[in-house]
Length: 201
Image (cartoon, rainbow, N blue to C red; front, side, top):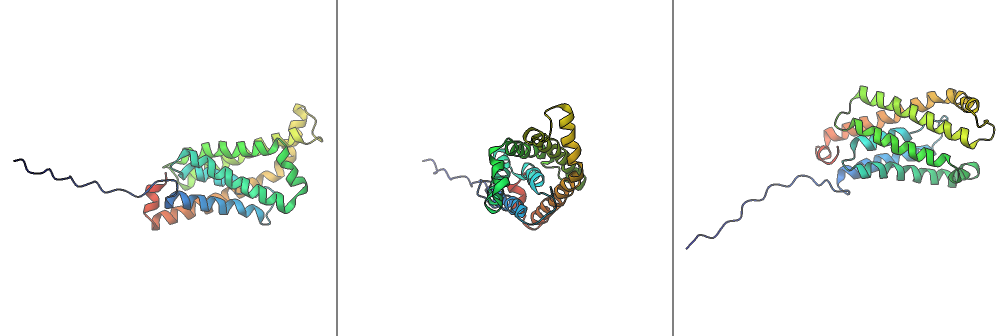
């Protein structure tokens, strides 16, 4: 008579990496909190938008959620701004500028994939500068398309970019400031909560 087979011990399971695991939820919470700072008084173009896109691209294990969360956070903050300010800001939803803005978020998220597993101060600085340039080029192209004061010619496009140069410093400073907060704050969290390392890229 053969002895009854014994079940082999199951391998230990690692931490959950599902959408609603702690890691993705922490990332989403940080991104939404940063996006909502757009409602606070700030210098023109001093914005967290590029930073949250880079951060999502760098850390969400799921590339799908890396795109979705920053876009949804931006939409929520845009709707809040439109409800508070109304008028010109609300009319932005009917123009091409909003689509350029959201396209920039998606492109910057894809740019953030280059930071996955290789986050460091120097790399975040370089990617933050690249994201700032991307937003400058795209947003002012949108301004040229939408604003009647700019002739629809190469010269008019040059005028739009020239007029925006004084504001570019704030784009860079905002991106670097929020990148330091998000990447630095999350690095500190990961050092204190080891489970977050397994649940994020």
